[in-house]
Length: 369
Image (tube, rainbow, N blue to C red; front, side):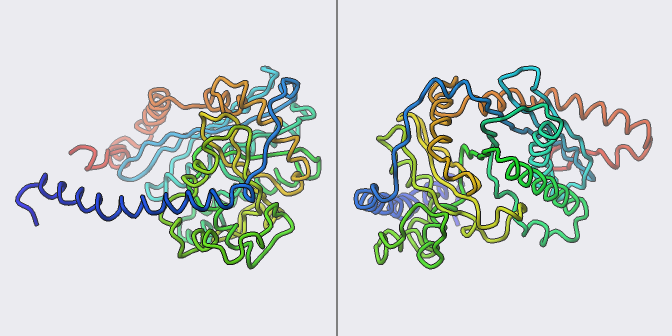
């Protein structure tokens, strides 16, 4: 107990400084040792950018979402956008839902990912996208896992959103695998330790989709560090990867099968045990991003990374593939724009519900404090 709030914060800062920060410093020293000993076993070079790759028909899709929460309901607005070299093929797919306030954010995230898959699938089925060389998705192929459906049996709208997502995802991946269309997903800011967990589990459960030979790390401190009780569990693996590739350009980590690093099964049934993941860095000054790719296309990894390398190097956002950057900028929902859409919906509701309108759309009490 403290007489003043500031005294309490000063004490907490001192505690963090001498306990947690010291612990972090020790972890980073351990990283330096592991990187020095194992960098060659973990990484490979990537082809430098070739301008000819920019002529490829690369399609990118991204989504955006917005939410207004009230006492009784939440207004969810989501949209997806597909980028193509042919501007006439660029399309939007929006969605508006009124849902209960609980799990509203999760429902919106799932709905947004569903739209991303659906817009590509619809255009592929219509023949509007002809002979794509590569499809780029934003985020993870593994989102969301089946635990979502199992834990939310009592939330019908969440269950409904998940089932719709699962159906679209399976239809999409069945199509691209059958038509042999290389597809990869990129995570800009990965926080899950899928790569480390998969590396640790490869010691006991090796996969034919692993590029890394686990025997190289047998009995090493590095494998202990990435395990469940290892020191690297205190931080995101992203910190290790950034140090691993700090002085590099046009380099990637070796790929691993990553679904074994998840707690539950993924929605795409045909990809269970068949997703390879690796970190890729093209420009020294930029951060690496995480790439996920169905194992069917892993024999084309050099071709795919060469394409990503070119589109990342010659990008308005150096280090990140231009098609995804363009899709992100085009789909970004502005707060004022979405607020006006929600206002139109509220105006319609006010005429329908009359006196009950304020009960449904009353702002949360906390927001009025």
